[in-house]
Length: 247
Image: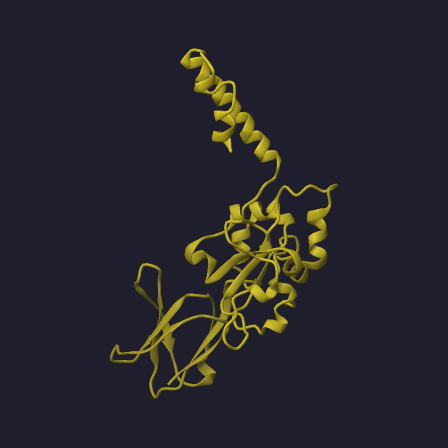
């Protein structure tokens, strides 16, 4: 668009005899003006997939969500504010960001969209925008009804208040509760595989339910258990809140 307008401008090299320096200065001024105009149009191209129906979310063969989803409105200013603050890589904890519009946005956010459409209260901060985390495995008929704690709520949930990344890393989204039970004859050693690929020793895991170890961890984190001979007897990557028995 900028190149097209400049080529047809009286200031383009084909249509002017101005000195080169003056011509470049004028072209730069026009470019700055065009950028300002486009910015004021509030145009937005979502950086992630956009869906208008919840039926378009990724589903598996059993009609359940095929991945963890981080959903947010596809319209600006919230789309840009959220995408600017969006974590990346492992800090998304297995969640796929998807922008929603139309029926999908209405189903997930309902009255929460009223603040976005309220011209008397301009949206200037990501804290004013709705978002929600959807768990992999949820039946498609239940996707439109997330638990209240799954929503981004920085004004009432202290785990969300510092940043949007804190919300993604909270129990509302990427953080989960997990526990380990040892059903083997002997105590085993439990390790966490850190992002550098090193196994960090956590603690001995003694036998049976009375010695169950509970922990808060994150989707995508990997745990390894070894017996007394240092043989790996469990290698598990966390995908949900849950319990695993080592046997």
